[in-house]
Image (cartoon, rainbow, N blue to C red; front, side, top):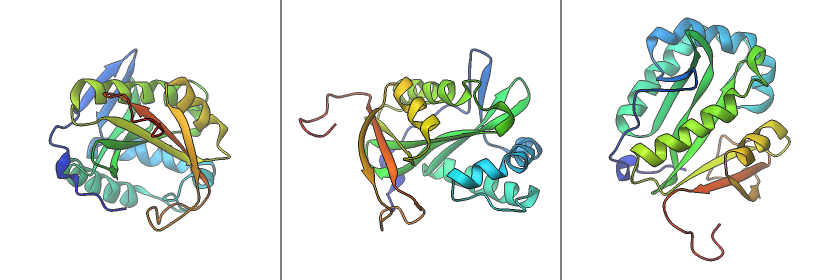
Amino acid sequence: MTVDPTWLVSRPPAVVESGGIVLARAAEAHVDGLTAAIQTSLPELMRWLTWPFDGFGRDDTREWLRHADEDWAAGRDFAYTILDGTAVVGSTGYTNRVGPGWLELGTWVRTSRAGEGFARRTTGMLVDIARDHLPEVDGLVIHHDVAHGASSAVARATGFTRVAEVDPGPDRPFQQTREAVWRLHLRRTPPEGNQ
């Protein structure tokens, strides 16, 4: 789905720290750490996400970072590198593809750090950032493969409500499996039946 990103005038902060986790706007300085995190986590990433592929390397990360920088400026995507100290743990951020007033969240954590609470804590940080810095955002959405129990647990633990399951369709051409859809209303009480 293509959304005109101009509805979102505000931007999230480039760096946010909470409880030892740093979310830093994805940048060239992270290329080696992100590449290593992706390469060591490929089997798991390829199971749940559409973008990783065998042989994903430094040039691919650089290209992603270039797009991430352009997308941040345009209001299309806001990609953060997740840091524990200086160690790259994964990536998280917002995608502006749902429609005016809504952003979609996504997170991945390198395999060697899975189960340490990074996905839950960074999702909570993104919720707080949206509330505190993005006044145009009424709510947040998480989509994930229905079989991914860890993603369900993160969404539930951070206050999201499961509202639907959707099959791949023209609005989400990158989607390959049936997905669970979770929503969190930030600013207004939703109309009856639209939760």
